[in-house]
Length: 129
Image (cartoon, rainbow, N blue to C red; front, side, top):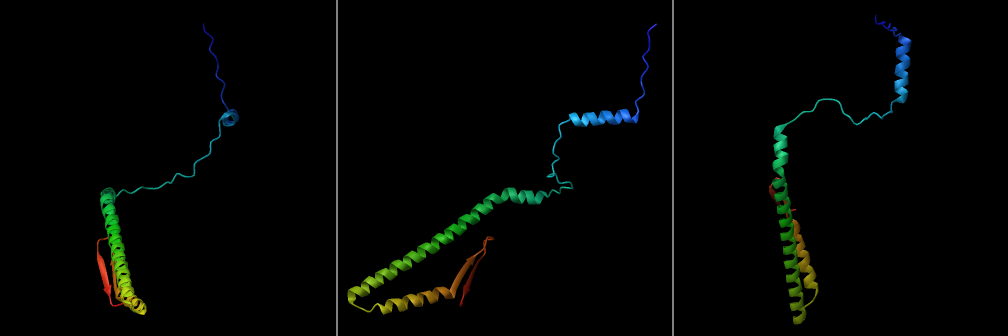
């Protein structure tokens, strides 16, 4: 007859010591604190706006750059006209004071009209400031 081995009953002390030994041999890992617990909401309309909005945002940047370029061209043309007038007056022997007065008048006219463009495509012109 085969001899049966009697199993030793494990006590709480044996179980606790075994757990302590396992904990000592385990590699301790740092618990991540970056996990955020909670619920995540998903809005498909916002996702579609974001995904399809690249073209819209790019076009608004293009429009803004085009308006700035036009302003620079306008300013350069104005400066060229002023230089042309100055040289013409110098050739005629007129006073330089007239140049300064005209520049001041043109600046006043520019201040009277202000144009502002918004990202939505709306442009507002304010006159009489």
